[in-house]
Length: 278
Image (tube, rainbow, N blue to C red; front, side, top):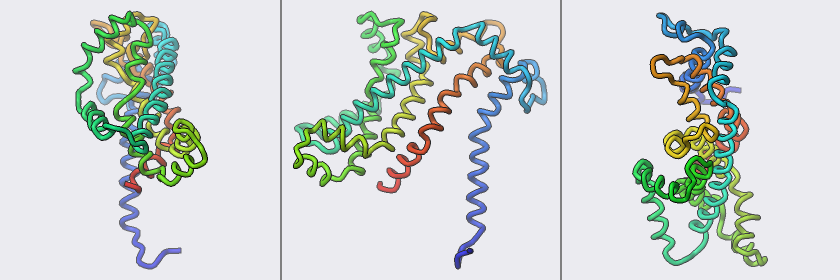
């Protein structure tokens, strides 16, 4: 039943805007599949091909012949999963400490943490490489995993989320029942902040999966290449087969889409809850 004073105009404009925004967001993925399923010559002609072709399997087989696609996918999945789990644990633990515990120098440490977020990561490239090289970790997966196990943004995000989602009375009740600090974090805080953890997990997994610069610096051997580095080797000096590269890129994007679909409900809940409370 139509409510009194309800107008259809603003709602129609809102849905029109949402539909157009959705189509614009999906078009890069569609265009990537169109190029990956055609030949490079059909894409370069004018007007270019706008519909999916029949060469996707052929282009995918060329990718498999040129690089160790599944080995690179495993390396990326192992690195992204390990980094994500580590970030979720350490950042939520640090966020809980900054949000609910009292200790000397807390505010100063938090300001220092925020200051590190303003430093471009490229500035730390050479010192980080020197440390990794001195440890003998070049061409090993821990060279990518260990430096990314904790992030300043993750600590900041979890601190803000725990501050708004966990009432102090709940923690005081836990202490009165004899819970230690770590048990309070593990049994009370973590189950309560699942939406915030899911949001941080998706962002971390996507950033780690798409990371290109640092793995390119420390991973030289083909056996430890991530999928982004392996796809980079598909470029030839005199000729670039865009259809083959985009077919490989499309297949490399599928794990990110699967992760997002699995945790999208928690991702939206985390963003919405933070927006409403702040």
